Image (tube, rainbow, N blue to C red; front, side, top):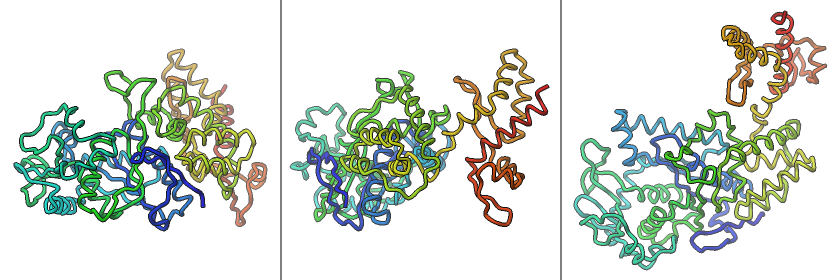
Length: 498
């Protein structure tokens, strides 16, 4: 079996990964607070741990890996969004949760085994808090319940490498008067009538952020599991507090055996910020025409423990590389094994930067079956090559029509330009105007297949289609699209060009 090595934040070293139970490898990753679109930085841990999930499934079997990633759907940011928009909290969280899943799906991320929502586990959180009070690790004060850091003082801060005294000295927040220790953190807080709340032994209230993951991880993975991941901005206080809560509530377990954290993301060498004008969401990029595979490729080009810099130039280079690779593997059949050097690089603490180098070597060697399998292993390709990778060829085929429309626009003959656009739309061809020019952005499948079914036997044979009996022919939609576009071009030349 392939040996996997992972860098463990807790021990500050790379270690051989030996799962607690090879038949049920378990991983928990902190998910988003759902109140808005996911920005580019939110997507990096999703892609990082999706690659790890794929590797674990590859090594241990897809039925032997359990991956949990939560949704925080009770939070002050959500409350604020509801207040300012006048919408129901449940409506906002349902919408933004689906946005997140759709956008991450565009990046090739597999859905985890479980995606629990915090509001589904309130009783479990209340039970854990009650247990912590009984064991002397938590206390009630003015309607709040707080974790008593002094009860875990010897261990608190080991993940992030801080001592309690240093944390207190460096604290810049106002300390609530009901805290016994400035570092004590909230497990439960009271809710006013206009805020979400649940009945509890301490009155109507809602959970603190940190207790959510501890309760959900215990319910779905047990008191000990293999891997806990997230961005390094969560190391303190969130992950530190998770460890304290979980180990005190379940001293018989170890909580997470391996802790993994990805570094942060910059844009064009600067921290992403709305004030700098370099803040954008995953959806912003997708709507600008940047394919999800390109975003994923740029992410994978940098090792997850190094800061990543998103640049437009990297995106352009990634798109060109992927178009080349997809063109090479489009005719390759499934069934080959991923290239051994790529599996080895992934197994060495997810060295995706080295993986990209090895993919270039495969491409140069012309080993298309292994290239195809390797692209699928790291999530840069599904069963088929993505449709967008063939669109540059579409533009070339109907370039005369596109040029005629562009000429009409240059002459400010917008009526004629609209007529050409509508003529193409009637034939299922959608064109999009972008700063880089006009391009074919979609070809309707129904138009293409109707055309394919109208072809005669000689035409099918000339195109290399295989007969399947009873007048049926074997071909892919991707194969027939260029032929259909040439048919449309011929129609244009016959009927429109005078």
